[in-house]
Length: 254
Length: 264
Image (cartoon, rainbow over all chains, first blue to last red; front, side, top):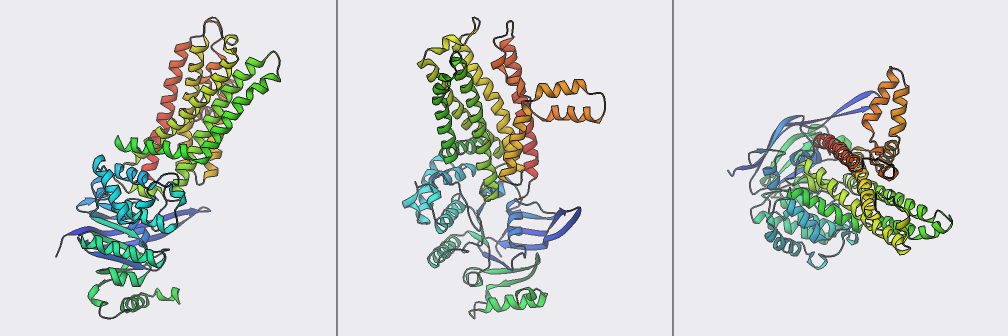
């Protein structure tokens, strides 16, 4: 079995919000334990509010855990060494409207401590990979959502990270954009990159993921292996619904 | 430090290309140029009107650059979640604050220097600089010092604008709070007067707290002071520089501590 690149142990995130003198407590993630192996594509599946984005934000250090620990290659996050190994694509990437793709990538590359000479070459490379080299000097306020998504992917892979975290990478894309993103994920994975992604799109998870974790109310209730769904198209959806019914969460989608 | 400079560099570029910034610069220039007309409306005081109006404009448009720059960049960056892509890099959060601050101060300085050059050109075109200055101070000594002192104010204003842009819940509230601090900062002498006139009690404590929290822009009021005989010019400037650095430094430190704990 290959080494774990991402290890989440006993992760809990409790939100406390004060409203009119009352404190409202809710759990975004509840005692989550999961280990992602180097080189695999791991999908996180769940309904809205199930804790997918919270989990991703905790891994990235945008939220701090209430209890538990997250390790990326033996570094507890947030840690600069761990962050160097991670590439992140948010659900809807926004960029600085008046900067060009080359400038934005130069900024992110500089922050990732990339060598300035190598960075120049790498920017051209990734812009070709995401098919945005023709518009590399245009201000990004002129870009469509699909184009921004591609720049988002470019910045995520710019520093050649070992672990890619993608939050709903195909949401809002047209069919061609979905196909290109899927191909890019497969290509990156074939080059040894580990992909951790959340999605509502069961068909994408079915095609891409080696393993899928199902989150219900912040808890990982099922961990499925590719062998459990690859025999039959649509099987992952059946398994997802069965899991929701078994955990009593299906009521909300009826 | 390379991360700080990368953030600062792109703060300046983004700011200079921002339409709002270009409009601010255009209006500032237009008002300065039209001060010749306003001067003509005040016969006998033309030089004073053009000189004072120019300096006020310099400060006001510097303020506009600092406030709108901080809000349009930082608050919107947080609201639109663009900041996620920065903070998920190996970037320490204090470096982000410092980079944004330095970029903001640089953008404000560019605005003020550009407007100062235009202001000087307006005055030189009519050879009116001869008429404004005292025997002790020449125009070419005082004018750069006046701009420099205004920049001290802007250093503090940029730190205040950045603080509220980071922690206010919306762009509007960041604008309002910064504007409030700016106005309150000009009432330093009045605040001191009220403290002296108030007997011991909760009100005096509140006034002392206000005096400690709000900046005191009176320290930068070189414009009204230099003509006073015996005025300790360079000593005054030295203390003002120290005050600006200390106030901005303290506020940036608080911003860094709070921002390090902020969740997104």
